[in-house]
Every structure is written in C-alpha cells, then in structure tokens.
Length: 312
Ligand code: CP
Image 1 (cartoon, rainbow, N blue to C red):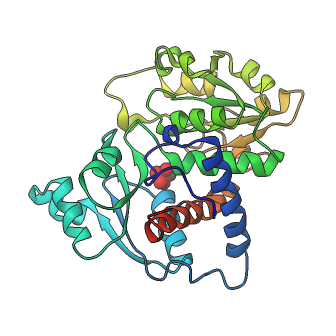
Image 2: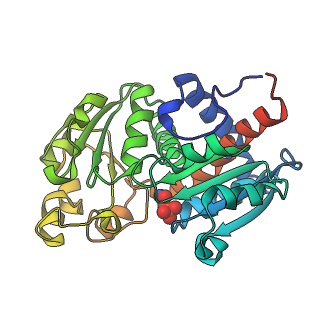
C-alpha cells in the first residue's frame, strides 16, 4: 500500500511530489464517497481525533470535523476561548491532558507560526496543521491545487497568479510550495508593501499590474487583506486597494480569455473580489469548499494508516 513520506502534516514544504499525488488520488476516491447517498465509511472507527482551534475558523474547522465524521472517527472539539488555556495552561500541558484521554490525532489551528511543528516535537501524537499564523495552511493549499487539477485535468504547466496580501498569507506560502512541486508557473500580484522581500527565491515572479497578471494566467487565487495580522497601514485606503488589486466583472470581462477564479475564503465582498465575480460561473470557490472535505478525509486517512501500521 502506498504511504505518505511524513508522520505529521506540518506544511507542504515537507511533502514530496509523490505525497501530493497520493493525497489527490485518495481524495478522488473520497469525493466519490461524499457524493453517495450514504456519505460515511467505517474506515477510522478505532481512531479518536481532537480538533484544537486557538484561532477563528469556519471552513477549516467544519471541514475537518465533517471529514473525520465521514470516516467514522470519534471526534472531540476544543475552542481556546472556552478552555483552561484562559487560566494559564500551556499548549503542551493542554495537549498532553487531551492525549491522556486516548486521543490519536490532533488537528490544530494556532496564531503562532511554527506551533504545529513545536507540538509535533513535544507530544506523542500525529499532528495536522490547520493553519499556523502567517506560516503554512497545508490542507488549504491541497484543496486549492486539487481544485485546479479537477478543473484543468492537471496542475503541471498551468499558469497561476496569487493576488493580494501575500505578506500575511499562510495560504499563499503553502500554495507556492504545492504548485511548484506539481510543476505550475506562479506569479504574485499585489501592492509592493504586501509582497515579502526575496519571495522570488521560491521560484515565483512578480507582476504589479493586475490586468497583465490576469491576462497571463489560467487561474487566479484572490486573497483577502488580512487586517487582523497588520500592525500598521500597508496601503493608503481600502478604496485604493480595490481600485488597483480588486477583481470586478468589467476587468474579468476585459480579458481576451476565460480564467478560473479561486478564493480560500472568507471573502470580503467588494474589496479583493466583487460579488459578481465571486458568484460567477468562472469562480470555483464553493467547489474548493466541497473538495476540502475530500482532501481532509484523504489527509486523515493516510496519516491514520501510518499510526495503524507503524512499521511500514
Ligand atoms: N480558508 C480558511 O482557512 O477559512 P477559515 O478561516 O474559515 O477556516
């Protein structure tokens, strides 16, 4: 049986190309399962998973929980706001107490970059990173690239532009790693202040002009401006940001080709993307959300099979 090369999902950086293809092929199977009348399989009846969210989430939290339940795992949920973290308990103590209840896997979202990696080195459980600060969001990049593969048949050779607040985006970094490993060409587009210095060293190019970037690409991934991660102003006003980097229908229609539009959510309608574009036939935003469940089922299934057959 094929297995992942890793014991945890900490970031796309640590996966190889074979891992990505294995996750996609497994997700193909689970996508078929979740579209059946009976959407549940008994595969992980003996596995218990804790979802630890130290940061807000709608899609990732619900998608992981649904993926776990579709696989028949036992699931417990932890929200930092209602926990003893508020009384000063450390992350390691919190997780070790949860593991003492015979939990096998931890899915964690945390505001600190590197939190999932830190946990993997300090507790005895399989860790899945559901987003760690501005670092990585591996399951999001997997569902984004899976959706691109679904739309075009393959990712290799496709031209993808990632638009917006690259500096604060874990989605951008994980997408860059995934798309590069799969052989796509990547351009980044956004205000200079929101593009990390030396980002070209990751094998991407920069295009400051949104229309030129869109004219070049097969698909555009529109990112939200992450105000919650900003300690200062990075552009004069939201109105000016939208004028230069927002995608509206007139701009989309002015291109001499039809491109595919992705967005990881949550959307700020009227800022980085207009409602007309977000709700258009060219947008695959809700397909991404549907694919997220299949991708997360694949991730959990493949990592759980390593726990169950540790010698392989
Ligand atoms: N895309 C994403 O991570 O969304 P949530 O913050 O709602 O999980």
